[in-house]
Length: 113
Length: 374
Image (cartoon, each protein chain N blue to C red):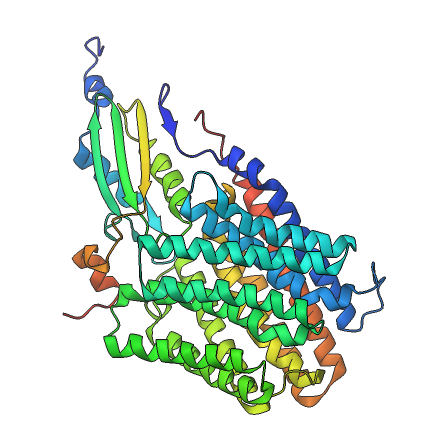
């Protein structure tokens, strides 16, 4: 597929789940200024046969932001080479807990241990 | 990215599906604002005989009820999509009242919308039984109760404490939910629940004893405002930049007005008197607290609910400042019984809302994303 062009094969290879996860740091909750990975809203990010499967949750089932986050995930992963499909699923349960936030998110929001 | 197929973002179809509700909510907003100008004494065509009396119900239940009902229906994603009956009831009730069909049916439709929203929160509570969801659910109960009180007693003012409770409890429940991110202590959370209980008891007490009820509810409003000013995430996020800071500024301004509202309710105890004090009591809550929240959350809620990108622009501070400046002028007019200040403060607020609407529509049109291949 690369036909000998240096670097092209790397560009068309499917991205690793780690890279996808890295890209998802670009999906930011506008009100908090913190991304969904740090907030612990990302439940799963896998890549198989060029298909990225993303599962995430919002902080409460009453929160309407799931469609906003879905759109932002698609916009973020549009930059990832080698993906044929991006399947995004938002979930309502099991409910999210603040304990799922990363250390840096906790610090940014003023947690004191 | 040729060949990339995407599943999920179907903004254009989302907008089309929700266009009738959006249109009805916009009609309710514009008619409510027109009714507001009539109440402010501007010499304008009345359009229909009782439009001025519909000012509050059109804005609170017709516009905000449709918007909030839609937000919850979008969140819950049920099949069949019964939660959409909440915004449908609010929108249909508002249009019904505007068209001039029998008022009772319009009021019943509004009450029905509130009842469906209560059922939505029962479903939410089954998934995530928490205090914050319960408080938002109480907001839905207040919507329903407000519509029924208005139905039983043609005086809108009797329903006003319930309409205020619908929006205050909805918003405070949302803020309580987000405050988890700052990990308030159990005592702090209990203090807010106590403030909410005080406010809720006062609202119910307005039925048998308006003066005592309003004073108790005012104390509850003050306590909630103090709690929000102390524990809300906005105190941290106001140090950030861009849209995050803009939202925090609007939130903190809203808490200031909630405190002012509490002081008015606590000190006056007036519900049915009308006049300047009543004007200040009502508009510090609905304009200062609620519309500041609407301005704050529009860049997030509009894309989420309508599938239309609404990028933040610094210009959004313009209508926000105008909203608060107009309200300050209006309240000073109320305090000094100065009709000119009251009237033009009110007109400035309406200008702020229309300016924000125009700015949002302009931003959304400029940022239109290509529709997804789905």
